[in-house]
Length: 94
Image (tube, rainbow, N blue to C red):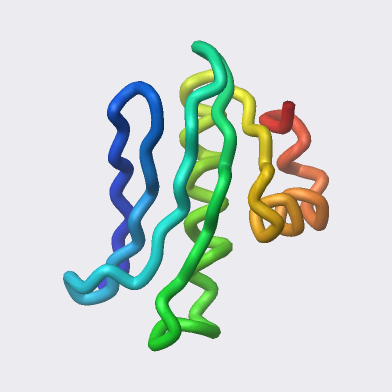
């Protein structure tokens, strides 16, 4: 079973993806004001490569931004690449 959880201390945080209760990867972010956040790193542990977990993390951030009327600044090269390829993410891009 795969699940994603968000941790946030109002300055920075991360989305963590778990498979069968084990941490498989994370995507970190930093708040940039009240209505936008910067994705600064996405990483998936080697054992979990090729499962699409990186994209799942980026999509979790996009879903969160949409639900909370927020914008994303994708400084992480991976998140930027995912968002560049999918024009449907433009609504949340800053």
